[in-house]
Every structure is written in structure tokens, then in C-alpha cells.
Amino acid sequence: MSEARVYLVGAGPGDPGLVTLRGREVLALADVVVYDALISERLLDHAPAEAERIYVGKRAAQHTLSQEEINALLVEKARAGATVVRLKGGDPYVFGRGGEEALALVEAGIDFEVVPGVTAAIAAPACAGIPVTHRHMASGVALVTGHEADDKTDSALDWDALARWPGTLVFYMGVKNLAAISANLIAHGRSAETPAAAIRRGTTPRQQTITGTLATLPQAAEQAGLEPPAVILVGDVVVLRDRLQWFERRPLFGRRIVVTRARAQASELAKRLEAAGAETLEAPAIRIEPPDDPAALQTAARHAASFHWIVFTSVNGVEAYFEALADAGLDARALASARIATIGPATAERLARFGLRPDLQPETFTGAAVAEALAATGNLAGLRILLPRTDIAPKELPKALAAQGAEVREVVAYRTVPDTASCDVVAEALEADEIDWLTFTSSSTVGNFIGAVGKDRVCASRARIASIGPTTSATLREAGLEPTVEADPHTIPGLVNAIVSCETGA
Image (cartoon, rainbow, N blue to C red; front, side, top):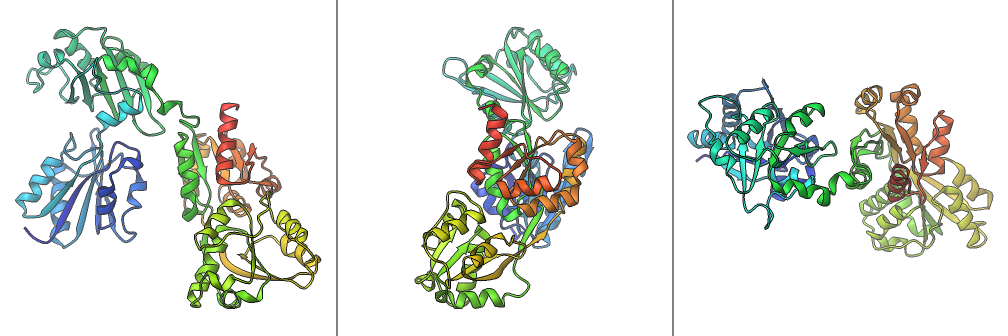
């Protein structure tokens, strides 16, 4: 074997969170990622930014590359010295043609590793509330290809044996042949009243589950407009769905929600929305960058002890200031003589990572509340107050502090710049009326998003608007948009709860 290596990685059934830890590890090593259709693009983010990404998806009769061409591509890239990750839906060796690719690598003398994945036959039913085995209903499960389920005389499937199978049958890729699958099983002795189900896009927010009997499912699927990809289940365990379904009962299931927060910070909001069942579409309207001239921030870091108060208004401000401290060879001890105020629990939590707790955090997460709380601590006249903030921060806070006699030092800790690269996708989705919610976590996201997408496009859609707080809401109203909900408290969890409450009427 050569030193080149190919990893055949199972990406799981659709939900990017169901890829294995080993799968994520090898993605991080990739020079080349060769990936299929139905792979969540979020998985590609685990690969290095410079890694080559090659799409080789297959859908019905439309193949980007033939299987032989894919095999040759893997060999070619590996022989060129690249670490290749072949990212395949589900498990590579379960109707994924991973065995064919592995044989091609063996014949070429290429070292390889198989990273198993969660297969749709198990995961999709689990998310539909159907256990494929049950001690009293099914002591076995059979995985069957649906491609062969037609009336051909040379079918490789033993329909008599399948009809007599004492457990659950799961057919892959059988949507177009569903009627033939049903007819063949019934013709070979399976009861027409056997419970059956079809699950499309299992484990994702677009999951669709259709139930019936072996006799009625084909018509029900046709009436529902069922399309691939889907798995088909036949067996008594299907009746457990009414009692065990959980996935589709989550409060935001099926909702498509746009996250406009900066990409580096979007994950917490996206994860909370997805945990509630939503599909998120990340369209960051802003990007966080270092200041053009860091000199003022560096000076403020070196002279931390000269300030009576340091006010952090965001997580980004905390990160930037402590990075400047580190660059100066200092750490949290440099702030020993200063008192610290923060806006919001997220900012306080980030501060805690550096071993500090705020001396002051108002219950209302606004600049006005900070100014009022600082004034309540005593006379501010002559006190030196540092505000490490974004370059576009509103001026109300420093003005309010200066009006009370404080000596306010504002420094640009980071810049907030427009990032509208993904807004075209959102614009198209809005025009197609495919967006349920738009979320805004700052005034800057409002301005940049509306500038890129257009107010009229938002107003013409059914999308509702969620704002994180009064300042953001005021900016929305200035832009001619009325927020449907406003978070209370003004935090990411509060924002998600506001959307859930609106959806559920709670």
C-alpha cells in the first residue's frame, strides 16, 4: 500500500448532528472531500477551508459522475498525495456502493479506512416514532433495496421469503416502486392489512411521514405527493407511531427560520432553533473584523489599571479586549483595580471564561440601563470609564455617562462590516414564500439585511420577524418593519422562547 489514504465516511441520514465523532475527525484532515447528494453542506464546514470540495451526487437518472468515474477520481486524488474523504449518505456499506469504491482502492493499492455511519433505515423510523424492532412485535429487521421491486422475472429478491419475514421490512429507494412492492408482498402471502409507512427526508426538519396498510400506502403516498428520498417500512411496529412520535411534535417542526447573526456567533441561535424542530438558514448580514488601527485598543489594554470602570456591551468586545491584553503580555490580573459592568448574560458568561465576574449587570440589557445602573453606584464625576465596542455602536451610552461628569474613553475593539453573500438565497426563498421567520439580534443586522434583500420583498412574504430587544425593534420600525415578537429577556434563549410562544400560543 502507498502512503495515500482515502476515508469512506458515512455522513448519516440527513441531520448533520448525526455524523460520528470519527467522521468529523477525518473531515478535519481532508485535502479533498468528495461528497454525495443529500449531504448537509454544514458537514463540509468541518473540512479545512482550503480543502477541495467535489460534488458527485446522484439523483434518479441524473448522475454527476458514473460510479466508475467516482472510483477513478478517488484513486487519482489519492495517488496525487491527497488525503481524501469520500462523504456518503447514511452508511457507506448499506446500499451506498461503498464496497465497490473500497474494492477499487484495493485494486489500485490505495490505503483506506471505513468510517461507519447511521443508516436511514434505523434513524428515519426512530424520528418518526417507529422502533424497527420490538420484543413483542418484531425480533428482526431486514434491509432491502427498492430498485428491484417490480414485475421483472429476473428479480434478485425472494418475494416469498420477504413476505414470510417475521419482523420489519425496510425498503430503500423504493418510492417509484411502492405499488409494486406492496403488490408483490401481498401476492406472496403478506396480509394486505399489515401496517406500513413511508418516511421522506427522515431526521430533518422536512421529514414527512405517511402511514397506512400494505394495501393503502401506495395510494396515500401518491395523494401526498411523496417523492424521493424516502424509506418504506412494513411491519406491526408502525402502529407504535401514534404513541411514540416525538420529532414532528417539537414546537418549531417544519418552520424555516433565517439567522442573520454574524456567522461566528450564529451557532448558538441556530442550535436552539433546531433543537425546537426548525430548519435554519444562515444568512449572516454582518461580519466581525479587527479594527483598522488597533493602537487605541492596545493602549487601553496596557493601561487597564487607569480606568475606574470597564463596560463590556458584547461578547465580541470581551474577546477583543482580552486578546489585546494577551498581546501586551497581560491577563485578567491587569483589571484588578477596575470595576466591570456588562450588558446581558452572554457577555457575562464570556467574561467568566477569563476568570472574572461583573460588578454590575442591569436586569435590562440596554445601554440606557447600564448608564442608569452606573449612576446608582455613586457620583460618576471624574471617573474614567472605558467602553471597548464596535465601530458603529450607538452614542447614547457614552453621552449619558459624560452628562454625569464621567471621563469616557471609547475605543474600537472590533468592526462590524456588511456580509451579504448569502442574502441572495434568502431573497429567493422570500419570493417563493418559503421563510417563516426572520431573526435579528442587533441593529446592524437589520440595516445590512434590509439593504441587501429589500423591505418590499420582506413585506410581500409571509415571514414574521423576531427581534432580540428594544434597540433592534426600534431600528426595524425605522426601516418600516414591525417585529412580530420581541425577546424578553433580551437574550438568545429569550428570542427562541418568544418564537416558540408565538407558534404555540403559550
